[in-house]
Image (tube, rainbow, N blue to C red; front, side, top):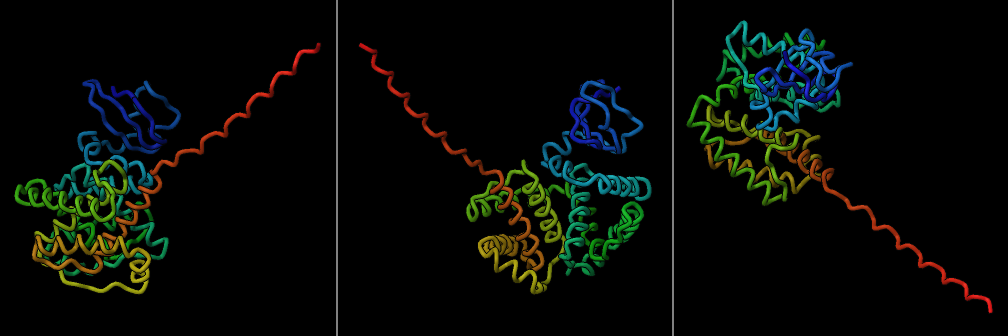
Length: 302
């Protein structure tokens, strides 16, 4: 029997099992009308994440921000991958996929979809993963009633490819070295610490993993950004300069060009990091006004 130790919202709780192991449980209403110390209603549990998988990676903060319908759809995709293709997604990769789907829908609703200039090269490089990604898009459509553009199949393909990154020691070493270097660049250029402990920094690190994964597999060709992104660059010149420096580092490290679209992605992550830092800056309240000095006591009557 598992016991609830913390309720995050109606659909996500923290629980502990009989062996004392912590686990994050996700399911419709799993945290509704219950309380700490009560047994988990196992009939409501749809997905579970062990803290060793999502807690240390910073992915847990992202998990709490993803809308439940998207988590449910991602669970269906995970089940498809496991049962049909024998692919088991690590918890951080699954959370990253859910977050990507949520952000894609949000961008589409806001009228600012990001086009995947590497779509057809991704399809040619990873044909098997791309076919699976198309199947995943069908599942997402069935669950959410939202038909995501074909560009998303390319992005989902990279999530699937990233799931195999851990098994390659050479790439794991490359990834670690690159992340440390890029963290230093962001700190030096923007004064922002990226450690995976916040939502924005966890997303940034996840994106960097995908960039490295792509660059270690094949070369990338340059594309062009449209007028919307030109205005975005103009409004955030300092951040884009940092994105270009990151791109230059990656160009040098992997001898492969980083596209303009990729730099736009980096810029969007840097904007989020900056805005998050600004929100977290503590503004001390003004000091209370000094209390007026007490009036002198009246002189005693003679």
